[in-house]
Image (tube, rainbow, N blue to C red):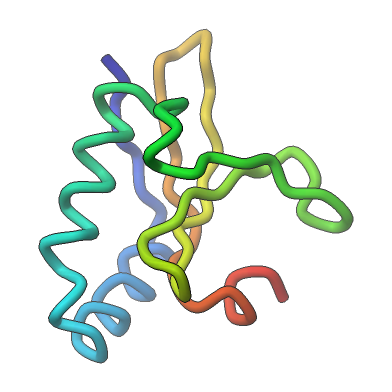
Length: 91
C-alpha cells in the first residue's frame, strides 16, 4: 500500500480544479484510492512522461484531465504534483 504526499502547489491547484469541476470530485477520489492500492493498475492509465517532464508520471482522471505525480517505490510514496487538463499539466 502506498502513501499519498501532496505539495502546497498541488493543494492550491486541486482546490481550483474541484471548484471548476465539482462533477469530477468523486472520480478524483476513486483515482487516489486506486493509486494507494496499486498505482500500476491499468485502469489508471499510468504512464511515464518524457521531454522536460522526464522522470515524472501521470494518470488519467478522465479523457481530458490528468493527475501528475511521482512514485517513489522504496518509500512506498506517491507525491501528487499537479492536476488539470492535458495542456495545463504538460506545459
